[in-house]
Structure formats: C-alpha cells, structure tokens
Length: 75
Image 1: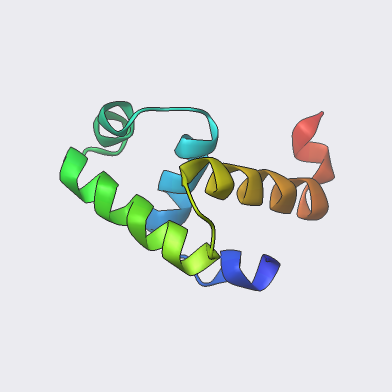
Image 2: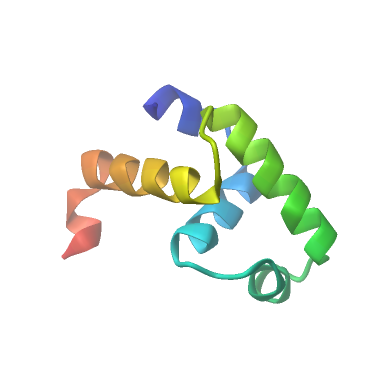
C-alpha cells in the first residue's frame, strides 16, 4: 500500500489528506481553490490508484500509511 500512496500526485495527496479529515467535496474545493468537479476527478483517481472501493477506503489507507511512516504526527 505504501508504494500505492507514492503513485499519487502532490495534489491527489493533498485531496486525500482532506478526505481523511472527512471534508466534503465542496469543502475540499474551497480549501484548495479548485472546482468540485476537479475534486471528484482527483478522488476517483485516488480510489483507482489505491485499489480501494470508496473514499472511506482511501482515508483508511492514508491513515495507516501515516501511522507507519510518521508516528509522531499522531502525537
């Protein structure tokens, strides 16, 4: 899974971190200054790249990755 995370573009990574914070597409679009349609495209690409079934699966994947690679980030 870590190698899958590495395939994400910097923008996809940003979007995924916000998805993991349970942000809506509208909230993500506002935070990043992009359109909701673009957010949906990024989320779709993320789901495909990570091989998960949903945005929840993607959020779980990034959370597990953060725990493994950056344990201090949780403190």
